[in-house]
Length: 119
Image (cartoon, rainbow, N blue to C red; front, side, top):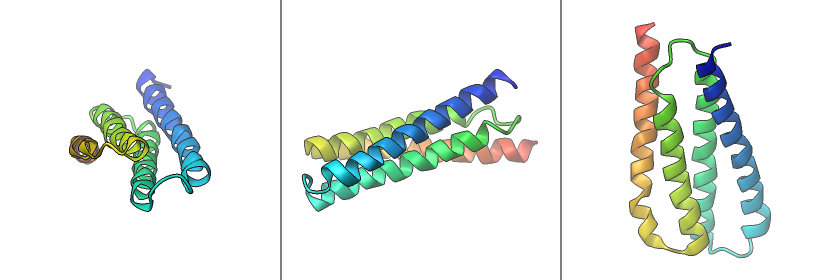
């Protein structure tokens, strides 16, 4: 196995594990404590974190994928992280940071498509 495979796979697996844990936390500990709109933000963060995690796991199995991993990982951290913080703190200004993470995730998926096409 190549080092790249292990890195993307490990990052995807850790992101997925954290997503499951945060999803359970939101469903059980936050359901009665958060405003429904903030809880929806938290759930969106978990969902998109899992999308990125699954993508990283899949990309880790592809030898030609060289550029998508970091934008996906960083985008997930920024996108989901800002939504988690906004939900937990109520700091709505963090919503201005969220699109940066989304743009990075989109870029990661586009790069994955381009790398797949090159093979």
